[in-house]
Length: 484
Image (cartoon, helix red, strand yellow):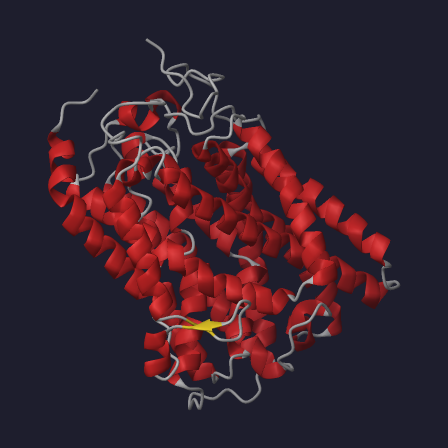
């Protein structure tokens, strides 16, 4: 008997029907359970998908960004190395996809229940849209800078036209779907590696004032660490299973883990270190005039760099836009995956225009990085503790059931997970330092400990521990229950 699509109210795709998984054809799968015949991805493909996304000027910019916190290069280097070790979290959050063949926020129904999961799915959708706005804004800012440098300054109507055009271009690859995204990012990664080599040569030719003796405070350094973890290992966990779900179920877990950890981790470390080094050769200003970074490069390289940067920014945004689309389906929006992508693109265009004309992008962006870990840390802790308690075994039919099944509990809500999520978020806020974000907030633990910020860690620990205490026995019983 065929199993219907698991988007609420949508019975558009039969999960047992085989469909062609091929690039440059619009993917019909949304949050469906992917049949074995369509799971054609390999761990190498997963590695290059992530590498292609992260070999990106955005991560070069993050290395530059944390240098503006007053850190020496040595302090930046330490934050980058330590922060990117947490790509292991993405590796762990990619293990469930091959097991059940579905997305992160369908797997998340196991700990939260179908209706309880809507709460964290909404947080995730907002987070994905935030990252999409960042990428599109940087594209728009780059185009505006190019006009001001090589032609004439754009009027407001021209800037708005750039926003609309950028959103339209951004729509294309996510609209096609997983197979297209995988192929495009793999081949683009080869081009980006060449750009990285050129960047490295130029940066090392023009180093100034590289210091390993830092004067920045522990508070400044821990805030930089939060940014690196937020844009890296922890910040990608909610996307992990969206891409690993096309791996065959018998893929060794160690290979899935390494592909999802090293694929983004290696380029992230290299590019962020280059960004921190480039900051020694330029004034540390962050504005729309080239984002500060091109000042470090000779004139002949600025235009090619900016042109390829635009391509790279579009590339990384495909990851977020694809995931935000399937998250809308997990929320219960009765649309196909491609329809959800269109909706998200329109919203991103509107928000980008608002930020461009009325916002303070750099303060807004830093605040966004600091605050998203408040929900992400507890959610990740709960997801992984749940995975450990049930020994990686899920009932796929119960995950996809519109009502009833093993994970329905009372009214579709598993209260232990929501309680753990709430307490984890409160704990995270106790140790956050978002003093220069909007809204500004410093938690009492942070105030007592010299303004340090370990919100991400406390959220993971408290969320996971509370869930283990409240739900451990029941989840262990569920793991041994017969499949429905």
